[in-house]
Image (tube, rainbow, N blue to C red; front, side, top):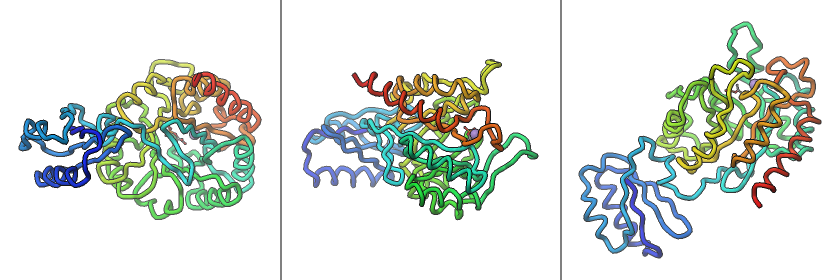
Length: 334
Ligand code: PEP
Ligand code: MN
């Protein structure tokens, strides 16, 4: 249920209504827009006399929210949410470029990539320290050392860092990481989502390989319902019968999610395609259809990469792409 208040309602009257609604055991989400204040009611509203609420002189309208996701529902927050990551804004017209290697492999590698992407205007540095690998025999990351090297790269370049967390046991290691990534395979790790909901830290939530948009939003809801509103969604391709690409990039998810939720939506064209030469065209398409940013894998020596070399861009390729992305954004703004 949402209650839209009239313009210019006195704070006192508003607080009175909120207090009264809270007496019914409801949680109230307040969204203050330019023109309206929206109260989002979460919980069992069946005992509340909505006709009475509608008739109040401070209330503009009352609407039922039928979707199972409430906190991340755009009806609760008509304005775009801007999520800040170490001073970088994502969403609401702020476009973020996240770049870096699939995995942190060595000091030399992460520093080389970090310096290069920074020079090309990247906003945030990515790098996996804990890697979810399909085979248990593959390189699965430098773990704590990987995070330490990321911090080193941050200290040198000033770029905020994002890295994937795979379990709640790893939480203490991530204290000083600017943004926590929940990977596709963990999108429905509900215990992990609940714990991330207790933090005051932005979370990058990637869509699962075989998950619907509603399921993605319900996972965001887990984090937000636990108290952490700073969620950024990421479309990274889904499983289809396409046999030439690693996944199928579902670009229509971007405008669709923008309609359903106020959360920022990023696109990861690297995991979506798995192929170096497809990363640039899909990035441009993502920028054109309204994504709030891109997450792109970049490696200084892709042939020697320990993970995902085939989809990694060389620094010079990333540089050329970043320029084109800026041009596309300018073009679609017009
Ligand atoms: C990654 O970004 O490093 C990653 C493993 O991506 P995904 O979870 O989308 O497969
Ligand atoms: Mn990867």
